[in-house]
Image (cartoon, rainbow, N blue to C red; front, side, top):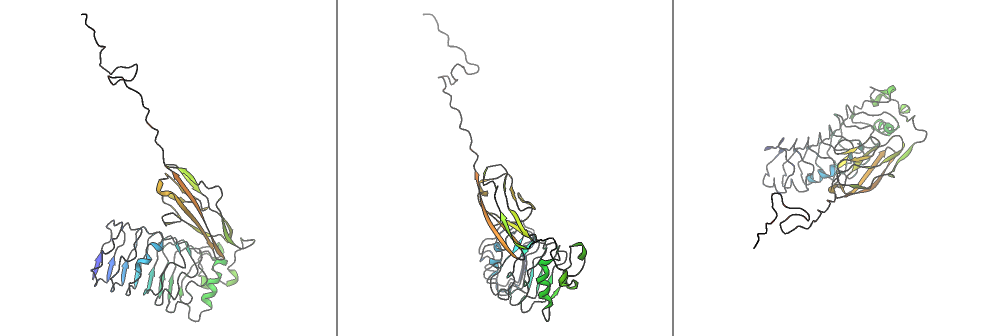
Length: 337
């Protein structure tokens, strides 16, 4: 049984919407306007094996994945072409039935160690991370320990083949039956176009670093108060080498790396244009390189626009202000007795 609801501009799914569709095997909710799905939305869909959620407005994987718990037959969740920027150790629950995890065409900049584990994915054989995810490095043990894993697809991603990929490359070479990973170097220029598997480990270096270090954040100089309708900047000055990847988290839990009304600049600063009351709250900056991470929160308060009170002017009995007459009125004529 197949249900096609793609391209319908859906913005939310109410609990209980699908509760009577117990024979449903495929559900297509792609290319709508969904940004969050509540846990329990798909309860009862025990035969569902394919769920298409691509092309929506998701930015935080934790706004989607908890809704996939309790789906014992779910083989393929298609989460492609959204706006995810980060996949972390807490992104997936235990014992998911997934075989193929499709994260192609997102904005993923960071995948942390422990994001993909045998505890969460005992049956997973494939992960798709291709089609433009701006990944520059992968953690050493990202797929190590997955008992059935076969293929990691990362074509077209702009990987930098330096010290940040050395651990991952070494991990693949230490496996007796390594999975298929066709990772092509985008930089440095001397390695551009080469497959990672063909690059000697001693060539995976960070020559630009005088001293390698865990990244850190300086948020000084941020504008923590802004008037409604104005523009404000929250700084996230990043230090550390090799260069860290970063993302910003809003009070509503949205994760941003580029674009939108809340513009995230290349230096990590967050620019909020046309601030409104709902923008008040804590904004977190998170930075990661292969050595570690740092995260700091800065608050912003949006002060509401105050309208000036109307000026009260007393009126004469005829309704005119003192010293004035209503337009068209005449002085009262006194007749002689």
